[in-house]
Image (tube, rainbow, N blue to C red; front, side, top):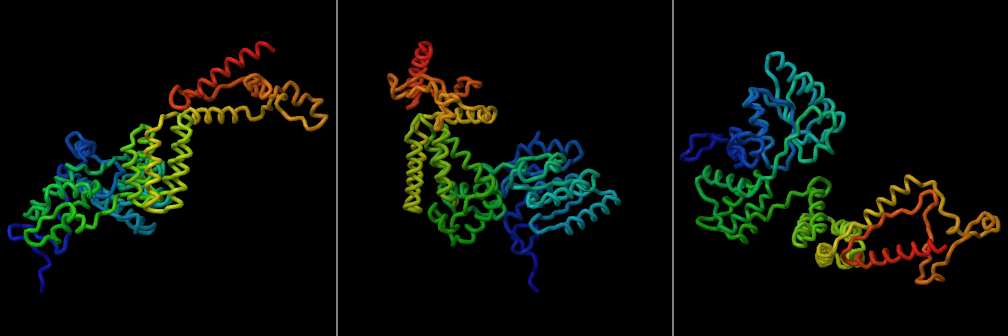
Length: 440
């Protein structure tokens, strides 16, 4: 009969055949967890919690491969709690009831349960509410793991009873530490040159598990003393797709980064985030729409061409398709990032909208209303209206706001870009208005 366990020549441990490298290297104590020192290091939140001798319910929020499951297991081991794990993807109400009953029975025997719920955000509102009684009476210490923003995905009642701890994507140094551990475990170096190793760190995309999976693929592919360069590495692993969910946090984080890079006049950063989203499969027309919005919100009349150029870029992509049309989006992105910035129209519009909501019942002054009937003329509609084209400079200086509201000022253009010229016009018209109203 074949041996169910295999061992290396110089190893005393016995492990199941086919056990993935990431599982073999799973940390055995909290201090061995890499990349989450703000939680597991000296003075970290979890370290302090363990020193207190008690655990409260927690939500672990972070991307895949950052150690959420491992840390939950280690916490149970360090505190002597029974560890139960379920996944919201594969569990329903019946499974939850069974886990809760087991935990209640265990508690009568003097032992508490740490219940780890992976992908907890996938439970619906009623299922999330079912955790509340067993959390409140101490039947379980709940540790939920989620890759999505808990503020949006979890019930307020659940969040009020659990502390949210954020797990960060692993940086290059942390990924390198994992690779060194893997090389020590396998007793051989990764067959990569220096450049290829740097590429591997980036390919991991902050995911420790993925970095170890990629390392396994590389060792399997290497023949004899073969050393892979960057091109060879990419050919072997066929490049792991970026961590990006078009409907979730990855999407919103990157579009926010793109928008703020444009607003901050950094064309290089803006192009980087645009490229990342396109590379991850984002709908280019969605990006085109966001660029149009940026042109209106952040450039405005400081450069009136910005809106026309972004609309043209959207039309160009519509006409050319992918990948040729993506260059038009890149051109518009760089144009916006390098254009003078103004949110003058954006601020003015919001102020005008507030005034409209607060004073929506006020009628315009009668002198600017048309009088198509004799009755309306007799009521004073249109009386006293000055036709601006008949006035010097085509400017009468009359008031147009409702009389009860009085003149308002919403738009205050900054002294930069094309709005510098607009500001000169407005200042000139204000001077004329004062002169002509005083002469009437």
